[in-house]
Structures are given as structure tokens and as C-alpha cells.
Image (cartoon, rainbow, N blue to C red; front, side, top):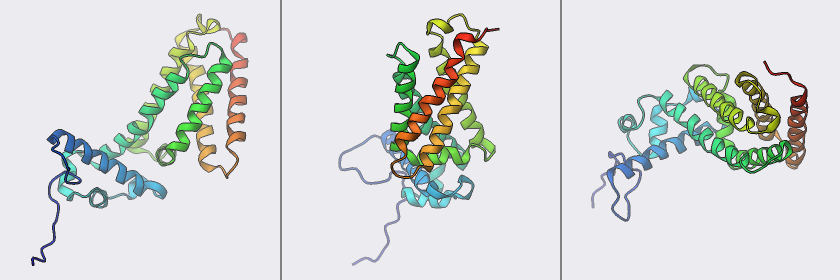
Length: 219
């Protein structure tokens, strides 16, 4: 009987039961690297993460890592994009139907609450790395600007805002995004049973921001 250890050298994470394409195996391994990194980042900063431990957790040799990401920073940026892309789509959907500010506020807060609770590891990573500097902080800043830009476009469809300048629409969107970020941090730090209070406060904050809309003279 052979005592040889089976060391995986290919970039597939597991042997498939049915034939899969090379591209599908590559996508599976890339996702395994992202999932492993996120799991390892549960209670530590990204700067402490090593390529070797991420590769080991994903079931590949370290050299195979480079078939998927050029550097660890590239993997981190991909994590940022993964965490924010779905939320942007969900938030946009939440703002599609409501015809009133209150409808938009309620739908948006409910969506943020649902998504944060379903993806807490992603948001702990984002809030931890936002002010850490370097490529990840820059990527988070880009995503937040895109998030704010999407919101500014949607705000322009409300009658009181149709005459507003692009600059003022973006300013209002930035205020709303700031409230949402505060809410995300509060949800991540909440004790059991506090979610309803946090989301209720978020709605009040947003209503307070929007109370000034009818009185604002756009430039």
C-alpha cells in the first residue's frame, strides 16, 4: 500500500463528479480564494493575511494563486467589489417602485438591514478597511462614489428635485449614503434585539435630511 500524500497541484478545488470546463474550474477556485480570505478576515485586518494561508484554505498550492490574482491587494479589491456590487443592485431595485420619499426611505432601510444581516462578514471587512489606506481603501471609496452616483440619478426623478443641479443632487445623495453607512456600523455592533430601534432611527435620520429639500435653493 502506498503511503504517498496526495498533494493537489492543479487549480481546481475539488474533483467534479461531472465534467466541467477549464473556465468553470477556474471560476470555482477564484471564488474559493475569495471565500477563504473573507473567512480568515472575520476578526483581523487584511494586512495580516498571507497568500500562503489563503491558498492553503482554498486547497491549492501558493503558485496557483497567481492564475487568479496578480497580488493579494487584487484579491482584496475583488472582495470589496463582491461586497458592494449586489447591494448596489438591491438598493436600486428597492428605489424603483416607491413614488414618495417615505416609500424610498422605508424600502432602502429595509434592504440595507436585510443585506447586512445576510452578509455580516463582508461588511465587517468593508468598515474595517475603509480607513486603512492603500488600494483597498481606494477601492471602497470608488464603490461608495458609484453608490452615491446611482442614488443621485434616482433622486432626480422626484418632482421637487428635477430642477436641482447635478452637484446638489450628488450632495444630497452623499448625505443619504453617510446615514446608511452609520446604520451599517450600528447594525454590526448591535446587541440582540436592537435591530428594530436601529432601523427606526435610520428612517428618522433620512426623513430629517429630506425635510430640507423643499426649502433648498439649488445652485
